[in-house]
Length: 244
Image (cartoon, rainbow, N blue to C red; front, side, top):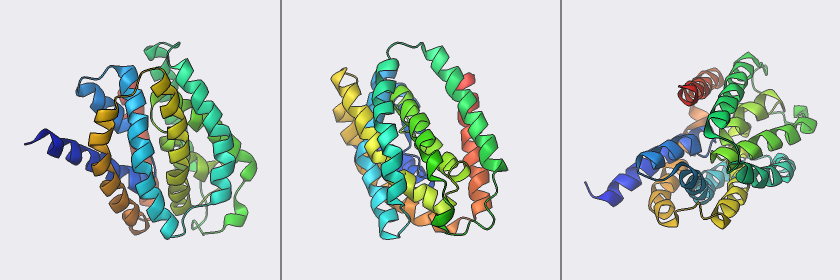
């Protein structure tokens, strides 16, 4: 199989999961890039570059369906962007073991809160959204983005839902839009540090864009309870992978 076909297929699968769960896909891109031979810090920066390009695909679809809460995006990014920049610098200071352990603990806690949280029938009622908690989501997601190259999306959806009371479908759509700005800020700082492989990012991006659009279309076909179980399972598997 031709290398570009492999790149497109890998990008497509990651993009579809990213569009479906509103997560960017960095938690899958980084280990994939490491397996492809990139150093860990370059893999982190390149992952963010891929996400910056592909996130527009899923975000555009969610915008078309009216599942993006723009005021939440703006408020969240006011805190995420500077946090992502700070995280990019910290990634070169902290040891990988410290990063893995701390982030695994955060993921397990978020998975627990996500499963425990109840939001009635997940009615589409934006009036119940707790905007005062959105900055917390922004700081946590931004730091994790810059530190680990995961776009922060893996935390956006459960934190939007459990802390800010955003219904699942809107949490996914809003996360997809917010991811672009956070990832772009992290990409810029990693690029300045020489930690972005643009050729690899451009090879993966087309598949990720197509996959993200398809994944975004599937969101409304999954029951909120099943969505929570699937998303929490992803969080726990990722946490255990980081620890082990």
